[in-house]
Amino acid sequence: MNDRQLGTVYLVGSGPGDPDLLTVKAYRLLSQCDVLVYDALVPHEILEVVKDGCKCIFVGKRKGHHSTPQFKTNKLLLELAHSNHFVVRLKGGDPFVFGRGGEEAAYLKKHGVSVEVVPGITSGMAASTYFGIPLTHRLAGSSVTFVTGHEGIDKKRPLVNWRSLAKASHSLVIYMGVHNLSYIVNELLLAGLSPKTPSAVIQQATVIGQRCLTTSLEMLVKEVEKQQFTSPSIVIIGEIINFQITSCAPPPANVTMPISF
Image (cartoon, rainbow, N blue to C red; front, side, top):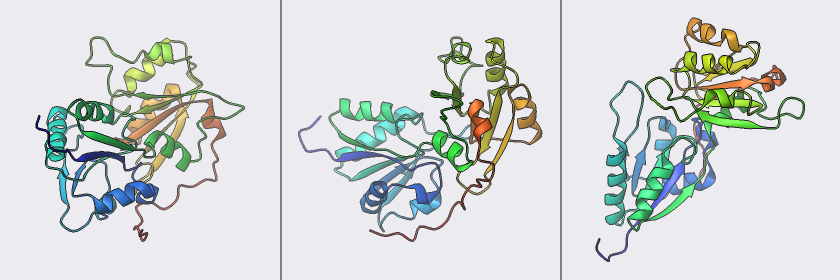
C-alpha cells in the first residue's frame, strides 16, 4: 500500500424503506458524497438525494437474481477509498444487522481505510411498529431475539439452532424467513413450542404493497402460501402479537422527501 491518504468510507443505513425514516445524518452524507455504492432494497426516493455528478454504483443482492459477490464489493470500496473519494456505502436497514456491514468494515480497516458507521432503523423493528405489534410488553415478554431465516436447508451444520431458540426467548423476529419457513416452523414445533403460538408475517412493511397476516404457528406456513406472501418479509413469533394495537394502521409509505438541510 502506498503512503498517500485514503478517503473515508461511510457505512450508512437507509432504514426499512420509507424514505421519511432516513436519519438526518444519513441524508447529509448522501447529499455530499462523491460516490454512492448501494444495495437492492434502497428506494429510488433516497437515491434522488445525491448531488449532481455523484457516481452511483449498484451492488445489490436479491434471491433468484444476479448478485455482486461480496469480495468484489469489498475490493470496490477499497479502490474508491484509494482514489480519495467521499464514499457512502448505503445499505438497507442498519449496516450491522444482517447487512454484511461488519465484513465490509473489517476488510476496509484491515487495509488502512477510515470507516464511519451510521445506524439505520432495522426492518425487524420497523415492521412490527408500523403494524402496532410491540416487540416487548410487560405482560407478554421481556426478551426478543433477532435472527436470520436465510439458512437451514442447504447447510450441513446450520448456524441457527431453532430448537434451542424455541423457548430461549419470549419472541422471535425472523429476517428473510419466508423461503425456509416450513423448516423453521417444523423445528420450533419439534422443540415443544405450542402450535397455538401467535405468529405474524409482514411483507413490504414500510413501503407500497405493505400487508400483514396473523395466525397460529401451526397454520403459519399454510396461510403464507395461501395468501402468497413473498420476500422481503419479516416473521414474528410470540405472545406479543396478542397485544397488537388492532386500530393502528401503517402510515402512508413512499412519500416524497421535501426536507432539506
